[in-house]
Image (tube, rainbow, N blue to C red; front, top):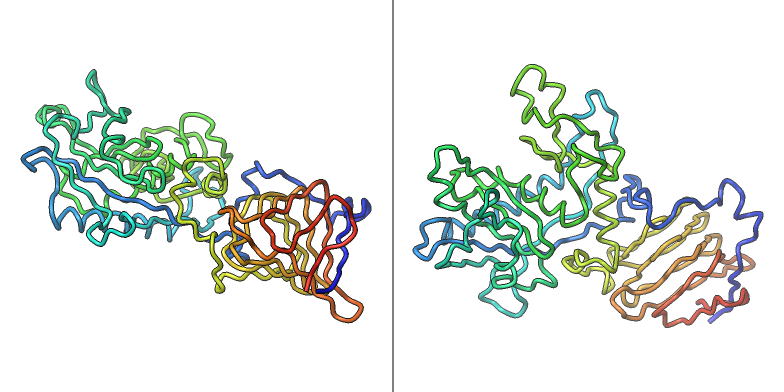
Length: 403
């Protein structure tokens, strides 16, 4: 083991334009995917399961292999929409940046149960199997069936596919349309039973409702916290509806429209911020791929980079010669992961928290020394380093251990 210095960042360096550190961990700007460094925001995977609700005589919803194939197709096509984000239609002539969406869904059965495929069927004798989304008997927001039929509610987002009430469907003025609601550990969606349409036609409904789970709100009526989601009229459902709709129709995932396939940078960042927040229920639905070390997820820093949002890395982190990384927020390293600061590289910790978010030990910071040159580690404010095998004391500005 060699000894290397860790030093408080000199004021003249902190104040130069090259080293000035702006923003806070609460700003959405810290969670925008950088297309030059997509590996800096690993894709998050949301665990989901699917529940089919039906009448006791199994006549009111899909059953058997048809339902299983439909559920898998729904998740698959929803993921395909997440893989191919579309440019915003509004405002007309906009230049909103098109960024990749960094989350997906994974069908998740109970662990250690070979007979569980994550798809469940409930044949209910009472009227709780139906979704009534308006009127005096509405049960849209009631959570009784979630508590009764939910599976792994703390770790898996439950998708409840429900039929519309047959009394409502029988009315000539009632439209059994695609509808849904997000309710904490579950989403309820309806319209699949009454409409003989393929699963892919409901993919945007699923993405919309799960968007609510991760902090997104409707965009047209009020301020949703994003400057790139414009307010607009809801009078146009599709571009082909009327001539004036050609330039007035939205395609945003959180609007009501025929497409719902466009995510703005701010919306993508809001979801990432919610996923990175260790205090939120919604984070619990994510596969914890950041707990253990993935040797193929090694990140190397060769430029001057600032991380202004919380991150959960899945591999080692190396600051190469000539590279500089400023960490301003929470940064989780996987079990047995380490931060390597190569000779000629620089790591700056500004009130940062370095830890393993699963409570496991990681290796710590290792500083390379080659001849008279060595890696540099500076701190600003009061960074906190937890769970590291190589203990680091930042209460003074003297030494740090490295190999």
